[in-house]
Structure formats: structure tokens, C-alpha cells
Image (cartoon, rainbow, N blue to C red):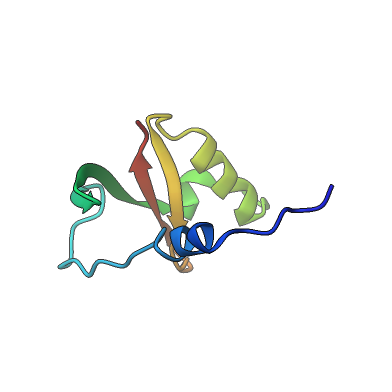
Length: 100
């Protein structure tokens, strides 16, 4: 099945689907609430950054990707994974957004 061509309005919507907001440093496991106004309609989003230690989630001789998948699958279902940060040898930061 072929993809139908997108209209100019659809392309513009995609261009505005993501914005970057610079925040002051926050502690891990804290929530950030963001309220935006889109065409006069206010929307509120809640985000949370969690730092997961590899040793807490990865079993000996297990690939980190498998441990990462387990972290995500066992996380509170009220939160959706939005971004995986840069991993270090010790941990990996994950950003979640509250669903609903």
C-alpha cells in the first residue's frame, strides 16, 4: 500500500510537533509540568526523568538492551517513555511523559 502525499498543513503540523525548552538543572526523579497554549487552547504536560543504574536492572552476562527493556516494561503504565538519554558505564537517564 502506497503512502498518500501529505498536504502542506500536515507537513507544517509535523514541523511543530516537537519543541525544545531549556530548563534549569533538576534532580532526577522529579516531575516537570509544562503548560502550553496552542491556538488559544491550553494543554498541560508532565515529564519525569529517572536515572536507572545498570547493576539494579541487568543480570550478570546480560546485554544492557535487555535490562533496559525490562526497566521500561516494568515502569508505571501512567507514564510513557519519551527519550533515552546518553548512557554511562553506571547508569542511563530515561524521560517519561504522563499519559492522559
